[in-house]
Length: 360
Image (cartoon, rainbow, N blue to C red; front, side, top):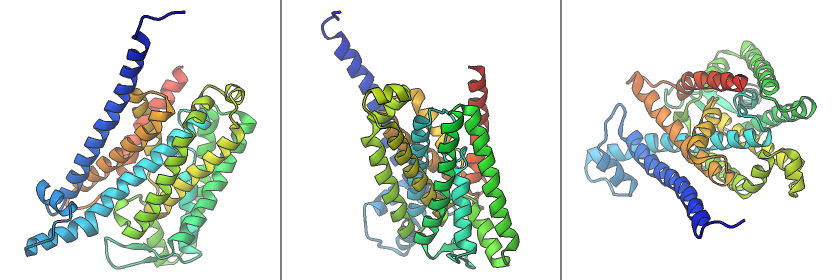
């Protein structure tokens, strides 16, 4: 079969250019939202002052010193934490949806986030890795982030193992996965409530406050840990993007193309669980980002994992950054935890996906 000269390459180039256009546009939007998020709040900072501070300009006046402290000690870590957490949760959602071939799979809907929350609560209450302080900004401190993350990861891994077992026995239909996720979420929520019942006043206050997903509680050390884990996970997922494309076509097709489906599925779920565990351990439960963002990105970038994975990471960071900025401004000067806003946004989208699935 012969094609007109240049027709296929030009179509393909237009196809690729469209994807790069959205990704480059997303990068510009991310930079704008980063500067805007840092500039707004109880103390308004002009755009040019934010840019000058980020570029390393030394403070000259007393006002400049105050701006420098606000940017580097408070707002920049919070904005970067939102970007990193949004990217990690979104990419974990993309990979789970691919390897389980389930459009409503995500760390939150499958109960993985709640499992990590229970594990972190065990670490805080039983192992004493969290403590309550008198300051509002840092009311809860994780004084042993490695232990907290490890315990949260183990429980995320437990939930992941249950999901893989159910998918192997009952198949990966959306209905089965949703019911399994509801059951796991209920189980681990009950476990968290059990710990809260037997905790003393300080532990109870620490766990309840920590459970609200909030990017404002992270410090630079925790941000470095989160960033390292999320970047390594994204790199692994991008390297295996061809395998995910093959699995999207079906297990038999993927095996026919030489993909070790069981190994890729297990490894990817474990890494997704690790990403979820680290984010939950430091920020609390932030729901629906891993569910909503992949579907938003698919509409403009498509299903090719080569572009979908980095695109979801980029727009996941933007979505959570925008949500966190809005949460800080809605009832200013009070700060609303970002998990409250993402739940308000995510619930209608989740219902829409369920209805669309049943309609099909």
